[in-house]
Image (cartoon, rainbow, N blue to C red; front, side, top):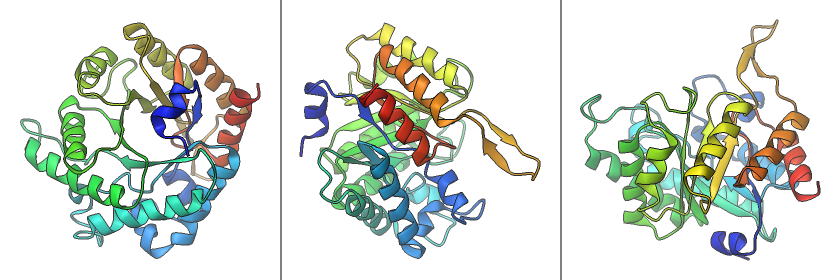
Length: 294
């Protein structure tokens, strides 16, 4: 199977999978519950979601480990099981991919949920150690790359990359969540992300989650303008969440709308495109069809 870098050297545009949390909630995951708990308690549901994304045409499957650091899990039933959790989650994703040629597994490494000093209690070293432990488990489980995603702080993301490097030699992708237009809630801009992480030798840089499909297009354009040679990762939500008549949170962007914007992202310079919150296998299938066949 071609490696992550070999896929780009061949000129490939890669399709990443869709949401984990919102799709598992549709399967019965209770709001506020750690999706990672299902790695042990409902592994067949995790496996089924991964397989659905593979069948939809995804080239990259993310592990169910978004909140898989010791810091995120410290008050949960999973405290003390970080390496075991991440390794098992990686093994489930690997099992779902099976022998499917060209499909890669990315180890998802989301934010800790706690701020670093001086804004919060964490020291950089504590964060580095937490991500190093997570990366160790993911690497042992057989992932092909590590994804530091949904970041909003340069300091935390830098510590995450440093931690990942302590435990693994795998390629690292860094993705920020821009929920304030062209900057994050901590004021981070795309130019700062490129200036910080390209010299660190990360494999790709991009954005996920965030606000609208239109705003993701602006972010992709901004990244491409800053560095036309950058491998850009774009994984937007299926629009902004709204409440329906049944008082349920829903995402109203259709698969065809996602597919249309995915083509625009690729035209603007994106090399990896997928979906975040609210995006289903149907959204991924539409994007794969539009990009690979359209």
